[in-house]
Amino acid sequence: MDVMKTVENPAFDGLKVSEIQRCFAWIGENIIPATTNNPAQTSYGLKHIMEHWIGIYVTNEQFKRMMIMCGFIPMDERRLNHSYRIKRVQDKKNPMYRVTVKNCNNTIKQGR
Image 1 (tube, rainbow, N blue to C red):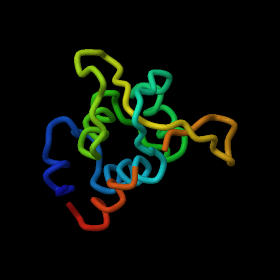
Image 2 (tube, one colour):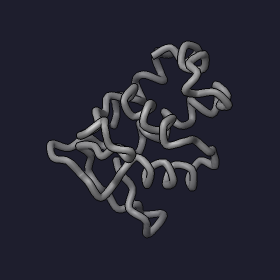
Image 3 (cartoon, one colour):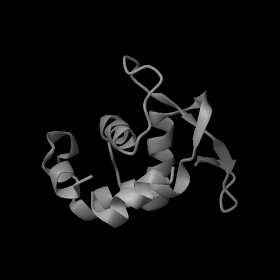
């Protein structure tokens, strides 16, 4: 993934390159794919968890775009809040659950 092309995408207006990179890093460190849908964790809820941890505001649409770019295909793109095939993992630092994908880490490291 080319972060500069991401920044030039109107869907990411208002976000700096460093903020986009931090969002992708958070997704890569905290979201793990699963074989079944997890309707309890939607894009809207996940974006709020991410915002809490990294302090960067993103819209639901921006978060959904980032998830797709990291390889998470929504179960139903027609829905306002996407659900994904992801696992729930207890975060030891916080009683909130966190979702947990490793392909985004590789994307960031390779500058794609």
